[in-house]
Length: 357
Ligand code: Q9C
Ligand code: ZN
Image 1 (tube, rainbow, N blue to C red):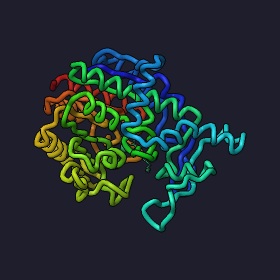
Image 2 (cartoon, rainbow, N blue to C red; image 1 turned 120 degrees about the horizontal axis):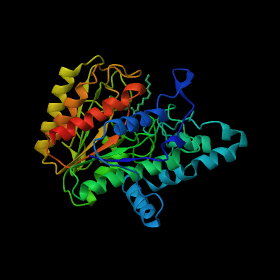
Image 3 (spheres, rainbow, N blue to C red; image 1 turned 135 degrees about the vertical axis):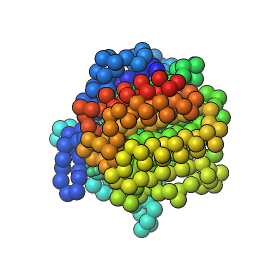
C-alpha cells in the first residue's frame, strides 16, 4: 500500500465550529493526520510519498481533475474566498470565515443564480452548515489534498493494488458546488472520476465513515458508471440529517446505482459488519473494476461526535473484508475524531487490507 500524504494539511486549522448555539473547539484538527502518519512510520504498510505540487504540469492536471467534479463558480469561490473575507474587514484576518445566512436553495424561491457581491452571503450560497471554518490555509490545504487523491489514483492506474490518500480537510460531504461537514473538495469523488478517466468503465465507492457521504452521493446520483454505497448513522438522528436514507436509490440513468445502509446510533461491529457484507455484495453485483473507500474512523466506540461502537481490532477485519473484493483500491482519509486512536485504527484497516490482498 502506497501512501500519499498532504504536506500542507496543517495550513487548514479552524479555531471553532458552531454547535447548537455556541462556538466549540474544532474536532477536525491537524493532530488527526499527524497521528496517522506517526503510526505509519511506526508500523509501515508501504512507501510514504508526498504528491508533486510544484510542476506546472501537475497543477494543470489538478485543475482539470477538480473541474471534472466541482463547478467552475464553486472553484472560483474557494480560490478567492480568504482574500475576499479579509477584504470585507482587515480584522477578519484573525478570524475564521463561517456562514450565518443561507438561501435554502430548494425552497422559498431564494435565488442562487445571482451571486451576492457580499462575501458573507456568498459563503452561505456555497455552504450547508456552520461547522466548517474556512481559514487562510483552507484552499492550499484542500488543493494539495486533491493532489494526494490524484497521485494515489495514478499509482493504482499504474498497477498498484492499493493506495491511500492521507489528507485533511476531509472530502466526502463536499458536493459539486458546496462545502460543509469539515469538507471542501471531494477527494474520493476525484479519485473515482480519475479511475473512470483512466479507463475503468465501472467504479464503486464504498463509504465507511460514520456520516453519510452526501457530497459523493450527490455528485454521482444520476450516473450508472459510478456506484455509490454508504454505511452510516441513520440521518433521522445523525448528521448530515437531510440525505442518506435507504430509499435514495439514484435518479435518471443512475437509478439503482446508489445504495444507503443507514444503521441506528449504538450499532456495534456484528451489525455493522453485516452491512459491510451487503455493501460488498452490491459492489460485486455491479461488476466494479475499481474501488474507492472514503475511510472514516469515526465509527470507533471512542469517537466524541459519533454513535457506533466499533473497536480497534475490528478495523483489521474491515481492511481484510475490503480486500476480499479483489479490486484495485484507493482509500481517502475522511473522519475520525478520537485523535489519540485514529492513527492505530486507520493503519489497522490498511494493514488488514494488505493481509487480505
Ligand atoms: N455533534 C466528517 O466526518 N458536526 N465530517 C456534527 C455532532 C458535523 C463530520 C456535530 C460533523 C461532520 C468528514
Ligand atoms: Zn464522519
